[in-house]
Image 1 (cartoon, one colour):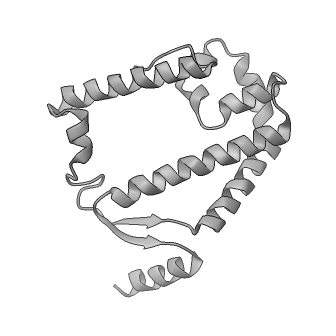
Image 2 (cartoon, rainbow, N blue to C red; image 1 turned 90 degrees about the vertical axis):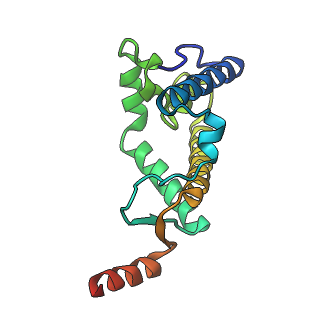
Length: 164
């Protein structure tokens, strides 16, 4: 369950975010009997229990370039046409998928409210901010065995795994 509608204005978006946090807090309390604030502080067993977790965490410059390349590739492979088609589907704008990274900006572009370059830049920035939040979250997660930062680390890790 999420706060539906009201997604086009900043003020309404903030209200929806607050409602979503309240819904999440209630769900955590209902399932665990623990308030969300306490649940977030607990380390617990981590995401994956006893599995070995390897985090691929590119160097910042590499990650930024990969984001840029991916956003441009998605555009060139027909992202604007995809969104144009989705806008014709009744109820799509209220769906969870319409809130995926970049889609709201793509709608702004298609409606002529922003230019292509502005749209691409805002998507790159939003993606980079999301990647940074993921990095922070994973670094706090317990049970991560190895953090690989570049191709050299990956190649070394593969060789060690073969020998083990």
